[in-house]
Image (spheres, helix red, strand yellow):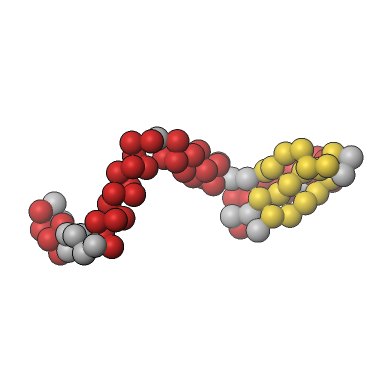
Amino acid sequence: MRRTLPVTEAREKLTELVDEVNNKFEQIEITKNGKPRAIIMSVDEFDGWKETLEILSDEQLMKDIRQAEKEFREGKAIPWEQVKEELNL
């Protein structure tokens, strides 16, 4: 969920806002002169976004994912029990 605050209000409540984004998994959009200028989000969420972008920008990895999805749809997947056994889980 995203909330919007003007920069003047965000400045006054910065400590509270940092706690909020870490506890509620939300983003806070900061506006200046009514226009969006920045987002406050937790470090964990930011790291997740970065990881997703890295995956999406890796052409070979995306090709492998699409191939795996195709094989899964075609029934060529390895059963989870077999995977656990092979990995000694």
